[in-house]
Amino acid sequence: MNRLIAIFLNVFVLGLFTSCSHFPQKSFQFDAQKPVSIRFQNLLSLQVGQAGCSIMNYGGLERMSRYSKGHPVDLSFQIGPAFSTIFNQSLSPSELREKREQIWKSWVEQGVSFYSVDAVDLRPSLVDFTSLQTKEILVLSSNLKSESGDWLFKPFLNLEMGGETFVVLSFSEGMETGAGWKTESAEVALKELESSFPSNVSAFYVLGSLKAETRKRLLGLFKKPVLFWGGANGERNTTEIISLTNQAFWVKSPDLGRGYSEMIIGKVSQGFSQKQKLKTIGVLSHSFASRILREDSDHSNHCFHSLEKKGPQPK
Image (cartoon, helix red, strand yellow):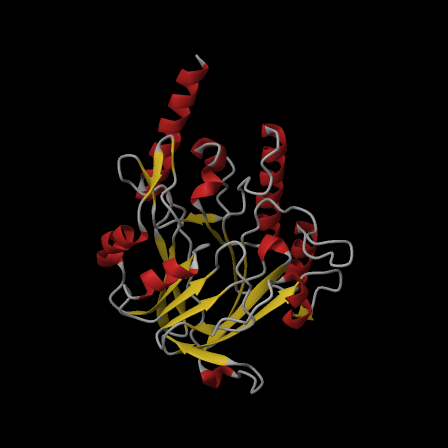
C-alpha cells in the first residue's frame, strides 16, 4: 500500500510541475532608467546556523534574513544545492525536513524571487523537494526533466533591465537520476531551448554550481555574452567579475551561507561610482562585490580570505 501511495504522489507531482501552465508566472521587468540591484548566495547545503570556527563565526539564516530586511534589493535569488545532505548525511528524515522548511521560510522572509535548483536537492525524492514549494519562490532548472522528457521546473526566465533582455538559465552538474526524473546534459538542454529564447537577447546568465571545466565547455555554445553565477564546492568565491574570455565572465558567492554577493547592473550614465570596478556584459555595466555575513553584517570581502583555499585568485 505504501508503495502505491508513493507511486501516486510521484505521478501527481510530475504532472503538476511538467505542465508549463502551472509554472509560477512572475514579472522580472525593471525600470529601464534605473540601475538594478541583485543579491545572491550559492551552495547553502542545509547550513541553517553560522559556519566557521569560534573565531570566524559567519553566516546563518537569521543574520541573512535580518540583513535582507534592512537592506532591500530589487532582485534576490539563491543557487543550489541548498537542500542537499552532502554535508549532513546523518540527518534523520524529520531533521532533514525541519532544516529544509527553515531555509524555505527564511527565503520567503528575505524576499527571494527564484531558486536555481540542483539535482542533488531532489534526494531522497522529488516529492520531498516539491512539497516544500510555495508560490512566493519560482524554481528554475534548464536540464532537470521527467523520465518522459518534460521539464520539471521553469527552464529559463527573462530579465528586462536597462531596456535590454537577459535570459537566465540554470544547470545542474553531472547526470544524476532518481525516481521519476533525470538530469539531461547541459548541451542538449540548451539546444532544445534555443528556439524559445527572445530574438533580442543581450546576454545570458547561467546559474549553477558548475565546475570550471564545465563552464569552459559551455561558454563556446553561446553566441552572445554569458555570465556564470555560482561554482563548484571548494572553489574560492570571487572578489570581482572574472573574465574567462572577452565574452564570458564568472562570479561566485561565499559557500554555506557564510556571506553573500551583490551586483549592480545598469547604464554607465545611471551614476556608478568611479571606485566601482565595472564590466560591460551585454551593453550594460555590471558592478560586483562579495561580503562576509557576521553580526555587524557589512564587511568587505578581504576579511573573508582566511576561509578560502590558498592559491592565486583566478584571472
